[in-house]
Amino acid sequence: MSSDLKSKVTNWDQKIKLMNIGIVGYGPAGIVAGMALKRRGHTITIFERDERYDLRQAGDVNRLDRDKTYPIDIGAKGCRAIKYLGIEPFFEKHCNSFKGTRLLGDGSMLGPEEPEGHYGYMGARVELMWALTEAQETLAPDIKVYYSTKVESIDPDAKTIHTLCEDKRESHSFDLIIGTDGAGSLVRRELQNKGLIECEEHRG
Ligand SMILES: Cc1cc2nc3c(=O)[nH]c(=O)nc-3n(C[C@H](O)[C@H](O)[C@H](O)COP(=O)(O)OP(=O)(O)OC[C@H]3O[C@@H](n4cnc5c(N)ncnc54)[C@H](O)[C@@H]3O)c2cc1C
Image 1 (cartoon, rainbow, N blue to C red):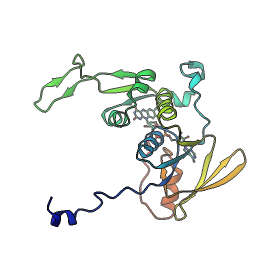
Image 2 (image 1 turned 60 degrees about the horizontal axis):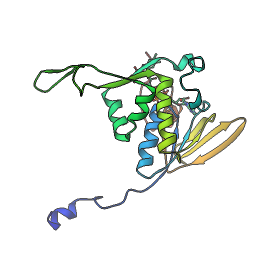
Image 3 (image 1 turned 120 degrees about the vertical axis):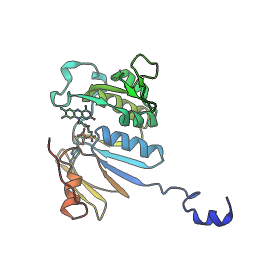
Image 4 (image 1 turned 135 degrees about the vertical axis):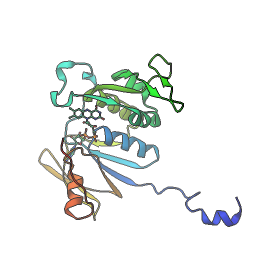
C-alpha cells in the first residue's frame, strides 16, 4: 500500500480499547454477547434475576420450568454465532441437530441426505440454556455472573447499574452497558424514558 493511501486508513494497527462491560440478562443473547466480547479481551459482568441453572440436574425432566420449556429452533443465524464461538460440542450434547433443505445459487436443492445438510439445532429453551451455560462456564469462567440479582434501574449517563439481591441494593459502574433482558426490557424502557432511543414494542 502506498504511504499516501496508508495515511487515509485509520484504526488499522490501533489496539481496541478494552472495556469493563455490564450486561443485563443471562439469557441466550446475554451469554453469546458476553462470550464474544470476552474473547476480544473485555471484562464482562452479567446480572440475572433468576437463580443459576443447575447443570447437575440437566436431563431431569421434573426440574424443567414449564414457562421456559417451549421449543426453540436455532436456524442459520444462530448457528453462525455458535460456530463463531466454536461451541458446537455443547449443542451436540444438550440439543438435537436438524436437517432441512436449502436452495443453492443454481436453483438446485441441497437435501437432508447430503452430508453438509445440517442447518440447525432445536431443543427446549432450558436445553439451549444448559448448552450455553456449560459453554460459558467451561470456556469463559472468568465472566462474572450475578444470579438472583434483579436490575432495578440503570443510569445511562453515569453508566451505572443498580441491583437488588436478597434485600441488598448495590450499584456497579461500567464503560459500557448492554441490555439483553428480553421482552419488556428494562434497559430499553430506561433509554426510551430518557429520550435516547425511539422504538415501538410489538406484542405477539
Ligand atoms: C412459545 C415461544 C416459542 C419461541 N420459539 C422460538 C424459536 O423457535 N426460535 C427463536 O429463536 N426464538 C423463539 N422464541 C423466543 C425466545 O424466547 C427468544 O428467541 C430467546 O429466549 C431470546 O433470548 P434473549 O436472551 O434475547 O431473551 P430472554 O430469553 O428473554 O432472556 C432475558 C434474560 O434476562 C433476564 N432479565 C430480564 N429482566 C431482568 C432484570 N431487570 N434484571 C436481571 N435480569 C433480567 C431474564 O430473567 C432472562 O434470563 C420463542 C418464545 C416463546 C414464548
